[in-house]
Amino acid sequence: MLLLLTKDTTPIIGQVASLLGYIMNGIFWLQSKIGLENIGLCIIFFTIVIYVLMLPLTVQQQKFSKLQSKMSPELQAVQKKYKGKQDQVSMQKMQEETQAVYAKYGVNPMGSCLQLVIQMPILFALYRVIWNIPAYVTIVKDAFMPLAQKLTQADGALEYLSEVGTKVGVKVTELTDLKVIDTLYKFKPENWAGLAEKFPDLSELITSTQTKIDHFNHFLGLNIANNPMNIIMESFKDGKILLVILAVLVPVLAAVTQWLNSKLMVTDTQTGDEENAVANSMKTMNTVMPIMSAVFCLTLPVGLGIYWIAGAVVRSILQVVINRRFDKVGMDEMIRKNQEKAEKKREKRGITAEQMTSNATVNTRSIGADSIMKKARTLSDTDAAKSEAKPGSLADKARMVEKYNSSHGKK
Image (cartoon, rainbow, N blue to C red; front, side):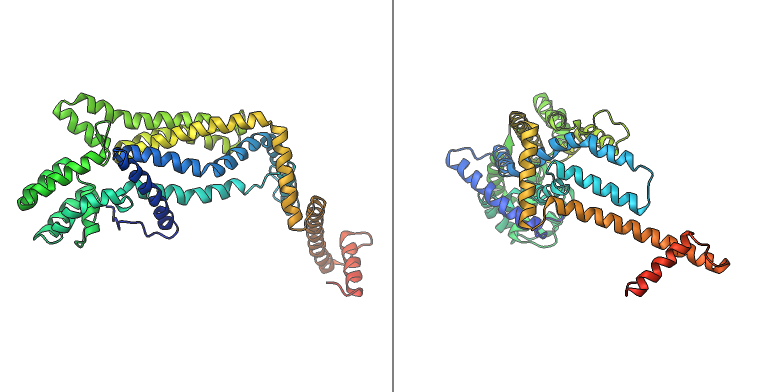
C-alpha cells in the first residue's frame, strides 16, 4: 500500500522532486496557453527537458564507457598477471599498475560512480513527480480542489475514501484537501461512478471534475492514471479492440525501446571475454531490463509507461549523437584531452605524475620490507627457542638489522 504525502518529503529526493515539479508545472502552464492541456504530452516534453539538462552527466558517462573499452584489455592483463596472488605485496603492486593504466588514459576510476550517484536522486524524484502530478502541477490540482473541499465536509467521506483508497493504493487516515486529491487522482471510471452514487448531492460537481481530469489524462485514448492491464481487461469486455491494442503497445514499446537503448550503449568493453564478471553482468542486464520494463509498464499507470518509453527514446538519440561526436574527435584526441585535465587537477593539488609513481613504489617497497621483517622476526624467535642462530641465516640477518635499528634509535 502506498502512502502518499502529496509532495515527497524524503531528504534530497524530496527537494529534487520539488525542483523538477516547478519545471513540469511550467511546461503544463505553457501548454495550457496554447490549448494543449494534456498530461501525456507534458510528460514527454518534461522527459526531453530533463535529459537535456542532464546532458553533461550523460556525456561524461558515455566518455568513461568509451575509454573503458580501450582500457579493458590492459586492466584485464593486470588482473590475470596477479590472479591467485593474495599476499600484500602483490595486491599493492596490482593496485599500482591498475592506477597506472587509469592515469595513462587520464581517467578517474570513481568518475562513473560519481555520475551515477548524482543521477540516482534525479531519477527517483522524476518518478515521484510523475506518480503524483497534482502535487506539483497547479492547474491539475486546482481542477480537483472544489470537489476535494466539499468532500472534506461531507458525512461518511472519510470512511468511503479510506475503503476506496485501499483499492487504488492510497492510505487515507484523515480528510484534508490534498489527501482527498491524492486519492481522487488514482480513481478509475468505476470509482467515479461509485463516488457519485455515494454522494448524490455532489454528483454534478463530481461529473464536471471527472470530465476535466479525463481531458487532462487521456493520451491517444488511454487514461494515463490507469494501468495497461486494467485497460486491456476492461476494454476487452466492452469490445474496444483498438484500446486493447493501444494498451498492449505501452509495455511492448517500453521493452523494445529499452532493448534498443541497451544495444546502443557502449558494451564492447567486455567483448569476447566470457570470464569477465562485468561482461556477464552486463549481458544479463541487457536481457533482463527489457523484460522488466514490459512487466512494470503493464502494471503501473500509463503515465509512467510514457515516461519510460520517452526516456529510452531520448537516451538512444543522445547516445547516437554523443557517439558520433566522439568518433569525430577520435580516441587519441580524447585521451590527450583527458590526460591534460588530469594533469591540471594534479597540479592544483601540488602533485606531479612522477611523485605519484614514486610514492606508489615507496609504499610498495615499504610494505614488502615490513612483510619480510615480520617473517624474519618470527623465524628469529623460532631459531632462538631451538638454538643460537647460525651465521648467515635469515634469523641472524634479522638480528643484525634489529641491532642496527636499536643503535640508531629506530624501532
